Image: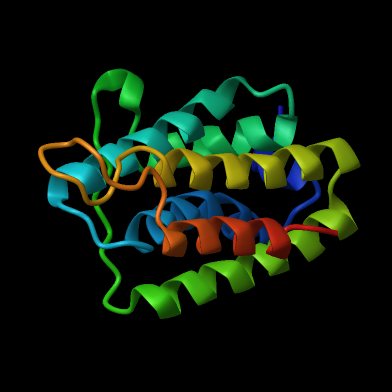
Length: 167
């Protein structure tokens, strides 16, 4: 038995692992703040994103499973009724740009170091997190009726994320 962290057996340094583990939660936050919403809608978006993160603990990809497990351990386990803190960046546009930059950095890292199937699964998972967040609660409308299921700014963030992760 070794005292080596799991991520070293996957071929990543501490800093690289930090990037890969931090990015899904950052994607969740950036997607949620792409369009200002009520506290109730923000909670629904956060819960939807966290569910996608938690479900990935069962991923066939060892990388995605390990990252998801690390996030749930650090942030919150929805299966236990835990709720993560709601992060509200002061500059949502700047935050989204930072997340997209880190996504491009993760893409390059995964291309260089990860198994191709793990890299593709991880990148698809990030877009899936964004998609679940931006479609979790409609914006606008009255008493929950009408409104947009996904706003233009949410769509742009999701699409820009997919582009940043494209090879």
